Length: 504
Image (cartoon, rainbow, N blue to C red):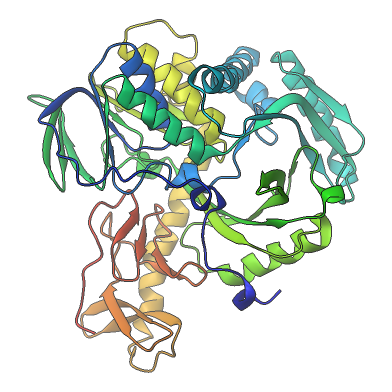
């Protein structure tokens, strides 16, 4: 499929769940708990604490559920690719069992709370499968099924899946679920407000002070708190060295109608390519949602071509009649593949973090909210040590070294490449370039209408050079995953300041 034939990037979840405007509301002077980020981790934490009687304010730079949580495939499952065999091998059977229990509790909490609050989020039970098309990898899946069983999960090994793929074997998890994430998040936001909390949009956190009193500094002023929860996907504060311990990855997603007899009956994932498949019903039409084609955020790849390749696979294998929506999902992975949830750094007393969900943020973010609720209310939680952001494991050190070597390569190599390009005036419409003009490295983009946009090419987080995403027309940082509009506006952190505007 030609990339130009695809629709403009737009999340199906955002498109099918209109939201009230929570922008323009006044920033309060203080709140007991300030939560940064209105995604699934932030809103779950805020709802649980508001329900427990705390005064809560949620600050969101954009809109509720319009960030990472609104750009997922929205599987609610404890099956996180091949997870339990390596987790049991590296951290022991108890760690695998605690991870499984926390994720299962998150899934069931969503099921129960959706019913209790009457949130119409399309929650539906489905089996989940991780399959392989390579006969040589079936032993790995057998070991994964056995490890998941030991962890207490409803796992089994099967020889095939009900999908038009040459599966050699699969791990099946029974009675998992899928839902509409934005509808769920909008329901949580309403519930927070009914419990006296505030959800404020269009307010970007710029920094946090821990002493003498916890304070959030924003583009609209300062807000004092007793506790601050940073649930901004990528932590915006460099204390804790999260930028050195998180690996930013993007997955692409396409969706469209399929014939009724080809509607996916379950949820599926290829363990090697990470192609993901699930169904969704909209306006009496059966849709399939297909994800995959992942790459490191900001890598120099032809993203538009990857979308086209994914669309071709979805058309051939799943039967999509046409592509109605496409979007990309941005996530972070930790060195040991277990999220960071807890105290922001070893000396923090009132600063908390939730990040690193490794593409499984629907149960992962919910589990984070349940854990943070207990931590802030001084309750025991058996998963505290497992998710501790300040843990250190020598077995994770090679992954940290490898990722930071990748960052160093981008930092040095991209500057060298920019030295050889010094002209942006000859840019064709719809194209972009990073080039050096005099002493300045410029990120230049010429719109299809011929307008030239030029901004400073150094990411405002730690100075790496951005790269152009030709599918979404954004400047993305390959070092730590910050993303910017072509005019320099911040889309996603850890950067909090826009790229410097230049005269074009």
